[in-house]
Image 1: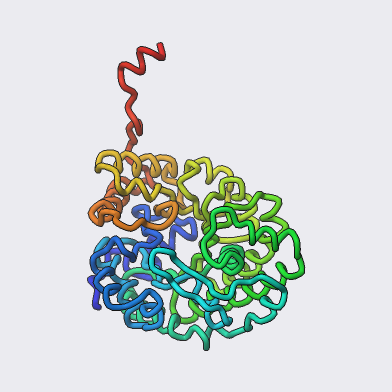
Image 2: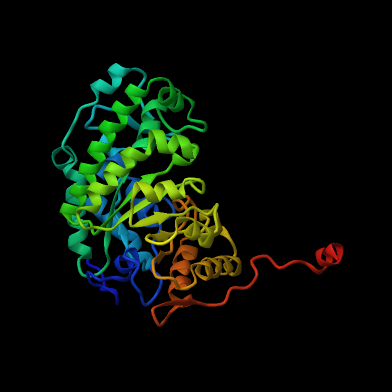
Length: 377
């Protein structure tokens, strides 16, 4: 599993510098779900092992973590795991059903269900994940930073209450609005294990961590403030005390960005539904940003993909603290060559000038045909 050292291979790597909003030689780039079904190397392992089998075997999890570092030349590795893993030792019966995604066979439906969730120490109950962190860090140390991660309380709660993925989160909101005591008990338990789990990943060797609140965009700002923010803030404050940079990410969060900043995080993730410069302006000073290429753009012809990469870099405008990423995870069947090309584009189109980066000029994203111009005139 040995890797060839990268030119920025040290504790002060460009990814970690960007998390701290320090000048870098090139904009760092990595991808959510950069290890996954779009890679032949990963499919070869999945042909012999289930997702949970990989997560339970530290050598396999570490190997999958390293695959995109070798193949793509990204500036950070992210641990291969799943956000729902901490629920298993709590007593949740979790299955990844073919074609359906995660299915929870004992969903939360009543106060007694929350009371039945075990309080566990992730250093013991999730030791296999922490060993994967140690193995991956051993291979990456001095080369590429390693990111650990966990799911945020609202996103975990939505899976627990809905019994799986959802489009409208009716069951989750019914509990949230209708039984505040049970909701608080549930999120309190989840916040405690997630804070401990992320801290344990840092202790095991993760150099940064990301809190995934993938489904929090289903909430209004008022609901986020009243029902979610205190629990995310508890986690983010505790983990930040470890000294590792913390990335706070959600999707559909354009209206929640100021509140996410209030909750905490050194870096705020932006999805593709808001222009990067607008999202950063909304957040204001004091945080770095991560994002925000539409994952579907990775299917675009190379010239279109290049224009979009240039546009995002132009919106960042050389400001220290930008980490290039997709706005959510890489999709299955994404062309690997396009992902690798984005890494090369980001590094090529961002160059050092003074205290920051100056992106290459970006052409118009979509040229306006002459016929349309005539009609408009």
